[in-house]
Length: 205
Image: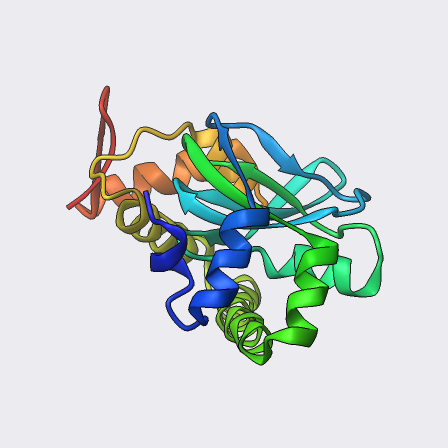
């Protein structure tokens, strides 16, 4: 698990000490919703261990927006806090995770007192923006079989597992499509020799 010093390397020791004193660590099991659409955010999360999925939902369909890895935050929650508006997205843990919660009022105070706090969130914005642009381009311009293959590669890279044991339904939710479509494309990829499927899960070859 990352420590505060490892996550906030660009911050001054005084600010890191403030974060250690006021931040609250929570251990959250896998598959637990940690943020929902319409919720007012009282604390900004930083992932210290594990993986958190941020996604949108419309008409019972989900679309994966990005993952929050150790050392990263959900910039959508920061945006909701900044504007004092309810969240526009959902977030849930992909695996057992430890999350550091920073109280909103303290974050705003630190942004006034420590300029490097603004730089930290600017960098988080930049990273998330790039990921969202990539996701939009994939949805608009790439065929689903390519999106699915990129999704599997990202999963193996993030979890450091190959094969990955993930239900077809979950893949379909993340990609905003139907389970039957995912099953058909996975079979096509298997026939092409790009993946294999067995009781252990889906393996990229």
